Image (tube, rainbow, N blue to C red; front, side, top):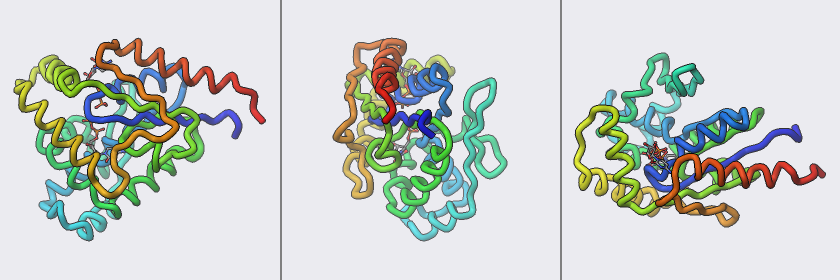
Length: 228
Ligand code: CDP
Ligand code: CDP
């Protein structure tokens, strides 16, 4: 289908990927796919089932018996783990602190990438994560790499938590973000890295709508190109 488009948005934690990905997807009538939510969902299940997160074989068997669905609803995207709504539960501190250890296993990634590619096979998508431009959708028409200073990213998460009524320490958040970025960037399997042909946007001093505008500008440039 010539009309299909894939937009990959990667970058470190709290750079604003999911917020702007949702806006861009809405604007272009694409499906938004939050790949981080998929890693978070299997991490939640592994914690609940007391699976050793270092045991790749056990995690792989667990994932093989797990369905993860991203369901669009009026209230936003819902994450369904098997049949349970885990939209909120996957954002817990415990999941956040453990997800990068689950996501470093090559066989877990292999299965996740296959599922993510299947989700994008027949429809236009905006997909966000860490390895979308490099591994999941290497042929994506538009690849974006969002960055921001770690201070700014910690501040954003801090404000977000405050809005939700959670009390968290800014320094703790900064440490957690730095730790997760380090693991994600240094793992052997599909580390967090800017794809060669990705457009890097430093969002440190940009608003959400300014970032969305910049991405849409890149998309419109591509869409105007004649189909050959
Ligand atoms: O939203 P936030 O930046 O906190 O993280 P996320 O996008 O929900 O991703 C959670 C974790 O899943 C990341 O820190 C990575 O360890 C892992 N992940 C990954 O390895 N590959 C992806 N494509 C997406 C997430
Ligand atoms: O998906 P990712 O972890 O990259 O980040 P996010 O969850 O989309 O954004 C983290 C927080 O930063 C959210 O509360 C956004 O509202 C906020 N944000 C912002 O203040 N300015 C931006 N340019 C982008 C996001």
